Image (cartoon, rainbow, N blue to C red; front, top):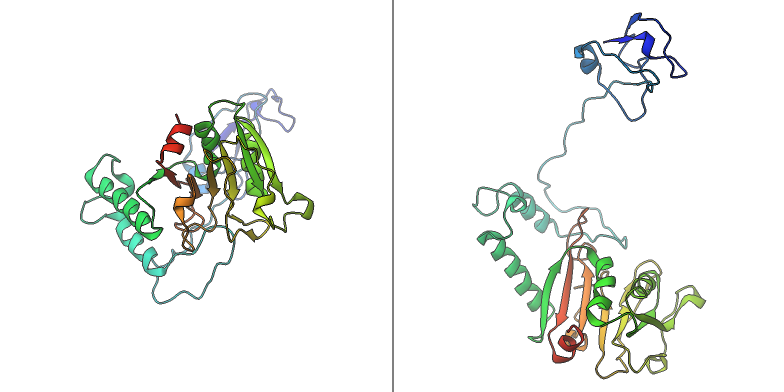
Length: 302
């Protein structure tokens, strides 16, 4: 590779000359530009290039060949257990089936990631997932199951946007940790959110001892809780009731979703970031949302 010396100097100014210099090796060149790396083969094959005056210097380095890949299919039982508060481990049989169907989904000739969301194969898959969740959590006919993008953070916004008619409508929050505090702050942008109880004074290491003592607004459109706070390690074993008979109970159940039986009929809305407990982690985080279609919730949602 050749460069015009008149275009590059250490201070970024041209030297006025046009001497060409050969590259001295694969490890490093006189061209030094952060973020740009070239393999020696690419450098050798590159034509002569002129670099404009005041150009940054470019540095390239040799890139090692990739190591041998791991086996495509794991065998036997894994001896690793993940107790982190983040994504849950899935049974090996589930991972192996997903692995086998990644390239070709059940004789369709393509991966499920390549299918149209309007196609019959994907439509059947999503309907089965919905039916399975209905059965697993004994979701009553008064509630719908929705699969939505954005994870739980989006639902922190969607709840007040759907359940409150204006920014002046009240909403109550039990702030028991980081996630419920985040939901409260987000709701404050779209409703008259208020704290019915807070564990901040004890650094979020406690929970309400008496739900009857919650400082609820009798006109609150909903009462929001987080059933399990992963960061601070506190979990509600029972759930409060909204003081407003027309209001509904809303719960972020991201980190204990599907981990135990829950009486869904007590809630107007349950939402959960599905990557925590029921699927693998991913850069895209869909959330499961169970919404009541009872008259009170439909009235709140307009």
